[in-house]
Image 1 (tube, rainbow, N blue to C red):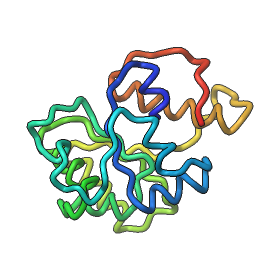
Image 2 (tube, one colour):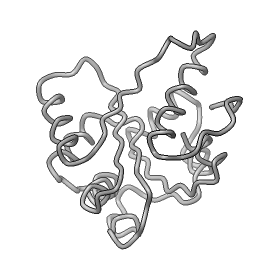
Image 3 (cartoon, rainbow, N blue to C red):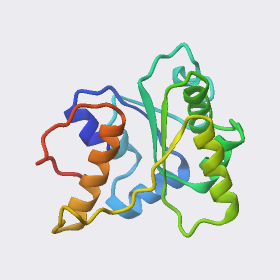
Length: 166
């Protein structure tokens, strides 16, 4: 996502939770420094006073990818205990686009109710489900197609389809 947004000349602000960093490392081999290098600005998740925690900091949209069910619940219930959930709360209150790419499955009733609550507040639930109609030849093509769908949802103009993810 960060690589694709950079290709579109979008300014990106990154918050990576400790669990998110663990996922990134397991799935891509990147460490904190490596993933932060992909963004224009990176923040400590404990820095609740960071610029992105204020509605006066104008953003076009926010994407949480991947979004844990813990973060989903925090957003659904306005529990702003870290910068990630606070920035999502601000995004909703300012009526900006919020996309949560909830990745944990299967869903239980609490997950579904939290998704409904976020949707009712104006957020978009976008589980990164693979599409097969374009006949992908690799996992990377599956990932790229999902990223392109989210980028389009954000209103970012379609870019080169030959970009390569991590």
